[in-house]
Length: 372
Image 1 (cartoon, rainbow, N blue to C red):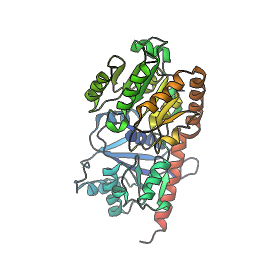
Image 2: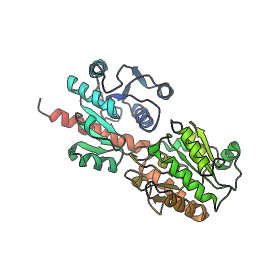
Image 3: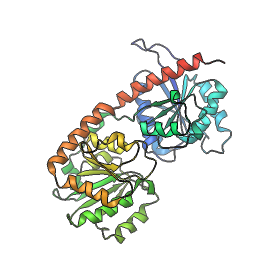
Image 4: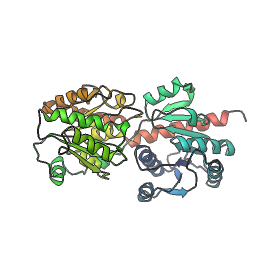
C-alpha cells in the first residue's frame, strides 16, 4: 500500500486502466502522467489489452503493465479481471481512460471498494463514466459537455494535458527537417498532425491548400498520421488539383520535429476534440496555429495572439486565416513566441502531475468520508 514519500507527502498505488486500439492522444497522456507520477515516488501499474506501440512506450519508461482480456463493451468478465488485479497490487485508486476502460473499471471499483477516477478525453456521452467516483476532463469544454448531460459538478475536475518541455529542446531545426523532406527553405509549408479520419478535418485543409495555391503556387501541405482515410484524402487532393502539393507522411514518431518544418500548424477538427495536444506541441516548437473554433481547441488557441480560430468545416475561412500568417513574417514570429510562452505556462507535465495528485487526494478523502 501507500507510504510517505521523502518530502512527507503520501504516495499512491495507481491502477491505470486503458484499452486502446492505437497509441494516440489519450494513450500518450496516460503514459506521460504515469511516468512522472512514478518519478515522484508513486507506483503505477497499467492494465490494458495488447498494443505494441503502447508497450514500447511503457517499457522505455520502466512502467509496470498487465496484459488483460478487458477490451470491448460486451466483455462482462472485464470488471472481475480488473478487480482481481486492483486487489493484487493493493491499489489506492483506479484511474481509467476512455469509455470501455471507464465502464469496466468503475464496476471493478464497486466490487473492490477502490475509488475510481474516470478520465474523459473528448466530448463523450456520460453513459460509460457514470459509475465512477469522480471524473476528470482534459478541458473546460469537455467538463461543460458532461455537465450539460447531468453530471454532478462537484465530481468533475479539469486536468489539462501536459507535455515535457525537455522533449522539444534538442529537435532538428526547421531547415534541417525541410532538407530531409526535400522542401526548399523559401516555400510556404502548412500541415496537420492527427489521425486520418473525417473528424480531424483533413479534407478542409486540402481544400484550403487549393485556395492558397492561387497566391503561393509552391505551397506544401504535410499530413502526418495514419488512418483509414488515407486513400480518400489522396483522391480528394487530386480532385482539387493539389495532389502534388499534399504529402501524406504516415505515422512519424518525430512529429514535433516535422512541425518545425511548417510555417503554420493546423487542426481543422469538425467534432469531439477534447483539447488538441498537437496545438500544445506546436506551441512548444514555437509555431503559430490555426484551429477550429470549437470546444477544447479554444482553450489552447488564443485567437489573434497564439494563432487564429477558424469556423468549423469552412475551407475558405481556414485558408483566410492561414494566409494572414503566411503573408506576415512578424505576425508568424510573434504568434509562435506567444504560443511557446502559453505552453510553458499552462501545459507542462509537471503541472498536470501536481494537479492529478491533488485530485487523487480529494477523491480518496471523499471516498473515506462516504457512508458504507
